[in-house]
Image 1 (cartoon, helix red, strand yellow):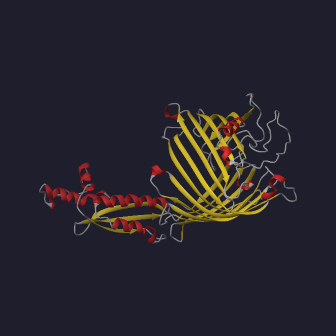
Image 2 (tube, rainbow, N blue to C red; image 1 turned 180 degrees about the vertical axis):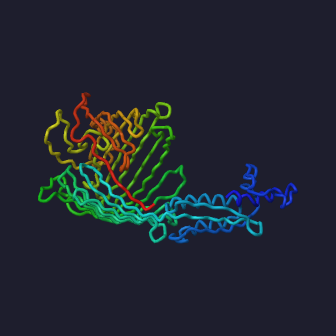
Image 3 (cartoon, rainbow, N blue to C red; image 1 turned 90 degrees about the vertical axis):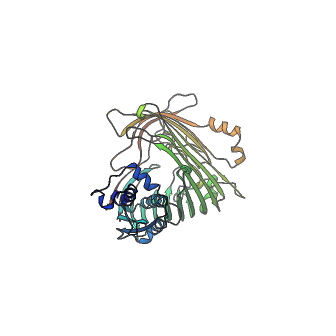
Length: 481
């Protein structure tokens, strides 16, 4: 790389001081900062010829746009900018193991030849996992090809089941070299779920969606847009009776929607730091046609180090959401509403309309009542995180949670000070301690084991109702790379 890159600048520099070409020492030239600075600031027009090799499965059109941009460079500065952009695009496709290049002078000494070498991945992967969510354990099988047809398309087939409580089949095609954005994805899906919170227990949704992730400046965050259409069906379990409150939600309904997600992450973590620091913010807005609803969601996480090397950390978490209807629609269907339980406010079987009360001691058998969910949600959490001596993968935390979920069809009422005070006053809260496993064999994500204690308004600790924490995913994945 260096020999080819600096051969022409070295010859030009030697001629300035009167040294003949045959007097140049043999072997690679000595590269100095002055030579580098001279090359990157070279002001005169140049010509660039691009050659490449290593594309066996991948079609040349996948990298063609970026190669043309390199050849259109008229100055060294243009070439460097174009190459950085091309390398970012090629690495983002995840179809190359390695990309290297070298430069050598052109025959007429008026430019240079760029030799680019690609090493392909041709990755195919298959995985099997078991996840538990909402008191349901479900196996999942997934197969993907990351360079389908040699055109940087990633095809993924995923199946969950066979239990009716958590069944899903989906197929997606992701174009990782679109004309605009980082990637574009088309998906077909058919998923079934059962809910124990209300009489419309059996839910099915099938549809199609298109999503794209825009490639904007890093300081503007990551922006994702999705357009989709789905047909939903809500039915009772077998011949069970549907409550009067949910009778109008029974049967099929369709929804066309447009959603925008914005993620802004300012997290950092050094090699010697146990916990991250900074802010992670996610904001989502969705407009649903036919159902005539607008949905706003916000999630924020802030990590503040308390000791050197982040040996202790305070983390603050916020989750809030609002759904409101427009047009002639005032009611929000049950399959569009929020639910709030121990996945965020630890220690509660459910929060919101119809949620069971906390009893001490908890009953041996207490079937949940009708919990149709809500459209106004808010929850906050604070955790003091600390390392466990002798372990590099397990940390401990003490936490406090508070959250509430309500249903209101009057949007104007929600934005009043009286409603906010009543919403906070009716919130459920809990405190507790636990262990967090950050890295485990066969595991994705974060696994917690907690002891959570719901609190009454007057403050005494109560025994947890139902399960303490019940959400994890374990899996194995094979790849030919």
